[in-house]
Image (cartoon, one colour):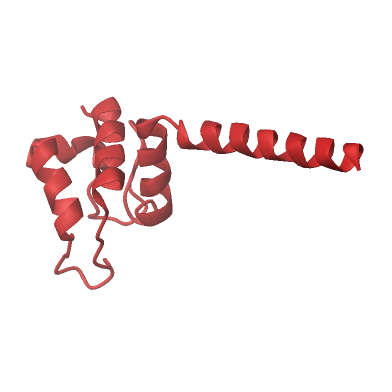
Length: 108
C-alpha cells in the first residue's frame, strides 16, 4: 500500500512540475508558435524569410503598417481580409499579447 501511495504522490508532483514549466513558456515563443500554426502557410513569420504566398506581407514589416498595440486590438477583434484565401482570425487577449511579444523581436 505504501509503494502505491509513493507512486501516486510522485506522479502528482511530476504533473505539477510539468504543468508549471508549460505555463512558463516565453510569450514570444508562444506568439511564434501561434503564427506558425495559423499564419505561416501564407505569411513569412521569421526575421528574413519570404512569404510562401506572393502578396502576403511578412509579419516582420507589420510595424510599418500598424502600431503594434493597434495590431493587438485587431487580433482580438478579428482580422478579416478581402483576399478569398485568408480566413478570419480571432485571438484572445493572452494570445494577441504573445503574438505582439514575438513581433517585437523581428521588426525591421
